[in-house]
Image (cartoon, rainbow, N blue to C red):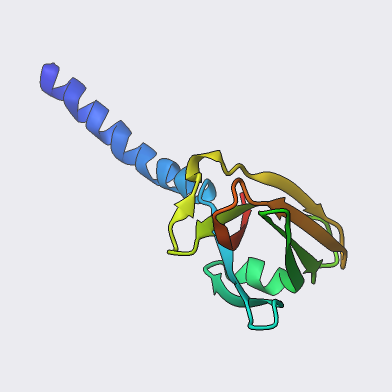
Length: 146
């Protein structure tokens, strides 16, 4: 009788495995990242260099960073990025900025939070961020879907 109970539990667990895997697959998060480094030339002008990383084809097809700029307000780096939706329907995203010092170390990693971003068909939106402290010299814009 005990062997039969164990066999039933194992059979039940094996039957539930595909359901668990499907739920886990649906819960995965896809992310696109765009890294910007702010440098100052000899004339005192700020330049932004960008690296864009895509690991979600749907997100890459649907949203473009069409403009970005930065400036220092006092000693804090302020940034803004303009995003354009290439979809005709409403899409929901989340975004955050990660901040890095001149040596490439992330600043206050635990304090970065995700902000909701709803984009309607073909909409353009500007998002902004302010570095948490004066040591920030680079930032990463991270955009995800849930």
